[in-house]
Length: 262
Image 1 (tube, one colour):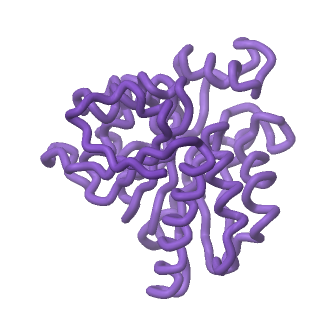
Image 2: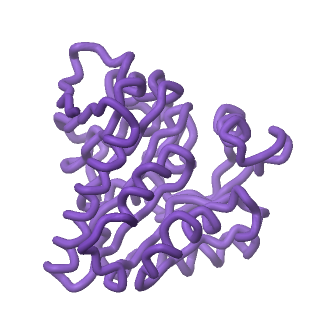
């Protein structure tokens, strides 16, 4: 278990000139992680995020050669309650359209939003706990959320997944990104991987393009580590790389050491 009271670890923060360069670089690192895990123990167990911010990364990743996707076992971070896999905003549908159909991943553990969430959590947790997770590819919400752990996030719960209530800022982001026609259409609850479970991954890639994420990036990676900025907890993980573009990094001050890439 990761010690949430451990000292802050110096993050690797990489900044790229544009979202495409960011996505390409994150995909290259993801390929290396996946290939190394397969070489070391015959498979790679990976957690994938969804959402608009991950599209460039996923497009780059599925286009890279040399990955034995049949040896990849995937989990995903979250899913709305009350919508099925045919809904345009379903994260299961998103993963099918942007990842699974291009790769034919060996094993997929998708969260079902219309079944009894207690059973879904029980079943996916059992699969998740069978072996260590090699990597988690995550993003940061406009409100600083990590998965659907909105502020104030629970940094203490030890379950792998839980049912969460989405705050208005989170729901408004989903509407503004075009996934729903109105705020009222956005579900109020979801299944989310917990903060502690995300931190159990051996390596974390945090992929955060776009100017609208700049305030959250500053709060999470320059401010205090606090449940009010949920992704700030990534600074306690021993192997996390933050991938930003010039817009999402624009508000960071000199206290954050940046690696500037082309």
